[in-house]
Length: 106
Image 1: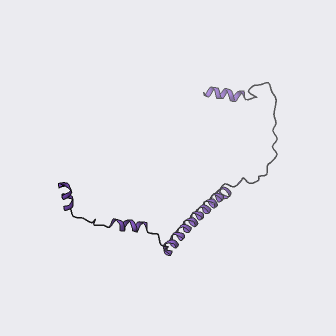
Image 2: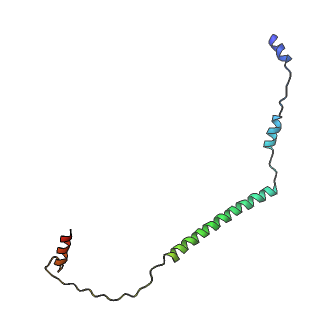
Image 3: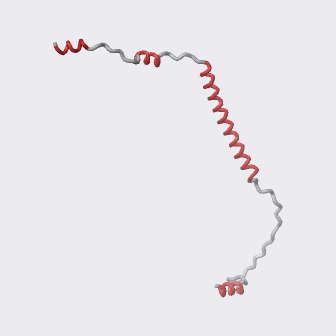
């Protein structure tokens, strides 16, 4: 009995902040705000347009670099060159003097 009597003496306190008002404010259905919607739409489209523009510029720079900076070699007129080969049994192919000079300079 003593315990229930002490409980009866406690005053009923209300919290300073209304918790239910806070819960209601966060669970209230969102209202359509046209300016916010328009801003997000424009911002999203602007980001997409900027990204596409950067991609196109990078592709054009790459094409320019491949095409104009490193052009394919131009067609050159080739002259006929005749090569004469002489068969000999000499392993140095008549360069004996050059080989002797090379060995002497080592």
